[in-house]
Image 1 (cartoon, rainbow, N blue to C red):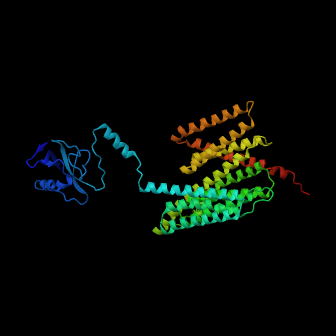
Image 2 (cartoon, rainbow, N blue to C red):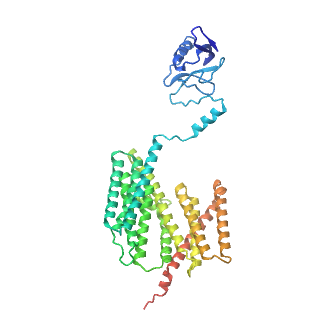
Length: 473
């Protein structure tokens, strides 16, 4: 370090560019950008300096450039250091040289931490909006119940739904804020359930019944379709809500207008849910308006169509992306229906209890094996979650129904063995690809379980007994 007569601190450094090195005395405390042009002029007298097309000149260590706004003292460049004259991009990230352990830990913590920026504050505000809206919906239902199911509370709920609709519409069409529109859509869908309060309460029971659940399910499903039409985003979530609400409405109608046992209705719902689970991909393609061409038969002449324009290709990509999202949404809805039906179908005190246990076991096998073969993460997680919920709920029911004897021990051992197999398959087997022979056997096992569970569900519904009693004269 040297000090001139003008009391300006200087540092003696060696700067090289290409194959030329020059020893210079540069200001220690001044920013590099203040004198970098003089350094470039010094080198231009000795070598040909390439004209920079973009970026800016700066000095650099052997491993990283120095920030032009910093000084040699800030970068801790000592006397005798060797630097390079380099052009850097304006977006290049400069990492300060840290020698102190405390500074290093603080810098690492600052880099790894997620900042609470404007976007994070916006997400927090929208989360508060959703929480407040759902709380108001719950308070409106409570107000309707404690006031003798009066119509003024229903009017308040309808007004709240209209406010949510206006907010969703404004956010989606005027302000083009997709996140705000999604937040308002959650409140809109929840608030539309208040239309069930229009149905009069039964004079016999004095409480809401299945008719209210039916109207609420229809209103929620229609609200989800409306939200998808207005916002145009999140088709997976909206399709999940719509399909689940449609299934709930159909189930309420069957419970209301038939005298079937709940386990029989659950068995029929489970059979339909498994069939719907297999039909989800085709339904998603239909809703996305994608028609796949037929595969030509062996020896059949293939007709070559003309070139696809860029507009058609872009539209096809959008529809394909929409088909994937609809597949995920409908798959989650089907898993919800199958899971709820499988949990309700098991009645440990029923005459068909062993058949029902077989139905539950086959359903778990189908969900696990099908989830293992899916490539989409959301769909696979939905399958595994459904299998876990069915297993835990079935085990809980059996433990409550069989509190003594060898029943609890058998149930616990079966659940423990099943959990061990699944964990081992997830940790060890997921990292390896299945051989083709084993993959074929896994697919056959899934098809066999599906072929067994459907007749068992029909058996539990009592359809076979009804057919047996039919007489033909």
